[in-house]
Amino acid sequence: MIYENPDKVKIGLEIHVQLNKANTKMFCGCTTDYTESGPNECVCPGCLALPGVPPVLNQSSIDFAIRIGLALNAKINKETDFYLKNYFYPDLGSGYQTTQFDKPIVYDGYVLIDGEDGLEHKVRIRRAHMEDDPAKLVHFGTIDKSTGSAADFNRSGMPLVEIVTEPDMRSPKEVRRFLDKLRSILEYLDVVDSTREGSIKADVNVSVQNKTRVEVKNISSHRAAEKAAQFEIMRQKDAYRKGKEVVQETRHFDEVRNVTVSLRAKETEDDYRYFPAFDLVSYKITDKKIQKIKDRLPELPDAKRERFVKQYDLSEALAKSLTTEKEFADFFENAARKTDPKMAASWADIIRGELNYRDLSVKAIKTEELIRIVELVSENKINDVGGVLIVRTLLDEGGTADQIVKAKNLGIAEDDETKKAAVEAVSENPEAVSDYLNGTEKAINFIVGKVMQKTKGKADAKTAREMVIEAIDEKYNGN
Ligand SMILES: [Zn+2]
Image (cartoon, rainbow, N blue to C red; front, side, top):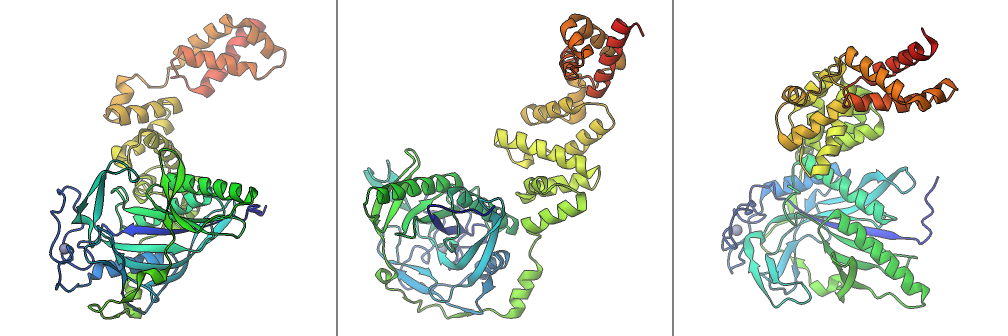
């Protein structure tokens, strides 16, 4: 099935990635880790933009940008240079942002996502360039009704990579999937700690029916990007239906009301008066350097997923779920090496669901516990219900799988206990029994359910079923 895209929705993204795993800011020696510091504590004359301090380009931000480029299947410019983008804003001490213009470090790549049609869909990457972050304004109150603002320069000079896609996304869902995939890749690369506030931000460009493109700026969550695109598509379609024009402008997404509001008319590049960064010579990147970085790239999500499918004989969907986060993939694989990989995969997936539900990271549970649960189930010491209970208790109360089995008495019911429950369930439910005897096979499930209730979920389902049939035979056929 080919996705028709009836409204000709075209969505492109500009994603600002803060390289907060780099050791220093982009052009000075200040730390990138200011999360525990008070306002304006991690600054120097350079990133405060005091006059007369020349910038010194930090090598690790260049290396990070190349890593990102290679992971996005893109080309690396052998000669790249910096420009000054001039504009006035109170968070920009120098009056310009150091960025790139016609020779971005990365160009011409792509990312694969699951498309609307269920097929693999290619989102092209036009370019990715480096720039530095401005300081941060803290507004008192909301952005449109603020009574005042303060500037914190800890963020000033943080290295950024801005990734620009072609308008290849055809729905809000594809936007969400693209952002999820990109975050996954960036985390595998270990260039960004995405849990830090504002580390990944997106501008969403939306047009419908091949008409005016509207930009929604500075969206910090994937869910909000999806919602903003949804609202824009609706707003633009509605305008055209009423015979109105859509203005080319920059809008802001209000996450409380789920609407976009007009901020300002869209600037063109001419408005910024780009000129070459006079203190920075153009930067040459050798093939040898690129090759060296390529050799050190980690296995990325797509490759890992494919390998899991082949090596552990998993379904695509399961392998994908296990590989979205690198740390989780390692959690599974460490267990898979020591126990039955298919069982480890399905238990890891159950654990993933329970972690997500509690908003916990995989750090909350040890690989040894996953291995132990697989062992307990495969040795028939607990059943699946017991396994899930162990996972939940581990996450909610701590302890080890073995302690929980003991404390909660989760061991599989002895045959005697199951037998007793089966006999009781058969005498207590004569209607279900007669349905079964009259040929309604399914009625047996009802009685097995009663056995599970009586044994508090500890009976082995297969044994319970056998014993129910046995009990019926004994009672009604006198065998
Ligand atoms: Zn500094």
